[in-house]
Amino acid sequence: MRREDGTVRKLCRRYNIPGHAHELTFSCYHGLPLLGKERSRLWFLESLAQARQKHSLQLFAYVVMPEHAHVLLYAPDDNYDIPAILKSIKQPVARRAMNYLREAAPDWLENLGTSRPDGKTVYHFWQDGGGYDRNIHSADAIISSIEYLHANPVRRGLVASPTDWEWSSARWWEGQPSVRLEMDNLPADAL
Image (tube, rainbow, N blue to C red; front, side, top):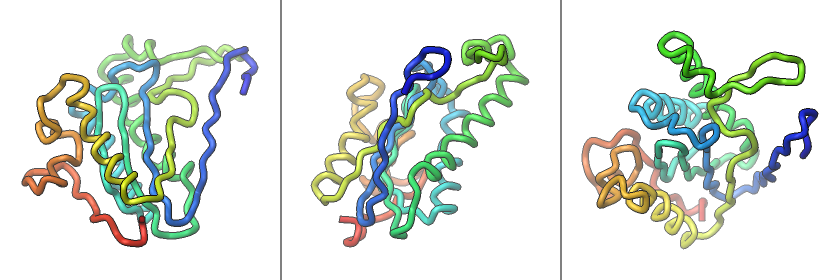
C-alpha cells in the first residue's frame, strides 16, 4: 500500500480462524534494540499478561529479543480479533517507552521520529506494518514454533541454551523455577 509521502507499507493479512493458534512477531522501529533493556522487556511482558487476561487468551510461548519479540497464543473464543489483540499488546509498551524517553532521554527520542506531510513529527516504537502472523493448526507445528521461538537467543549467540535466556518461556517448558510469566498447557482443542 502506497502512502501519501510515497513510502510503501507492507500489508499483513490476518485470518481469525477458530481452532488456530497464532505465532506473532513484533519488530522494533528500524530494528533498533528498543527491547534491549530490562525495563522495556518488563513493559512488554506486563502488556502481554494484560492482553492475555483482557482477551481470554491462552499463551503457549514467547521470547523477547533486543529488537523484536515473538508470541505464540491461542484464542479459545471463536469470535476473536487478532488486530485488537496486537493493539492491546503493542500500544501500552509504546506509550510507556515514549513517556520514559520524553522524561529521561528527549534527545534520543528523535531517533524514533518521522515527519508527516503536514509537518507534524510522529514517534514510533514498533515498526510500521502488520508484523508477522502465522496461523498454526497442528500439534507438530505448535511444537516446532515453540522450539523455534526458544532457540532465538541461542541462534543469535546471546546464550548457550534456551533456558539461559530469562526473557522467554523456555524455562517454564523445562519445569524450572523462577519464570517471568506462566504459560498455558496445550489444550486438545487448540490442535
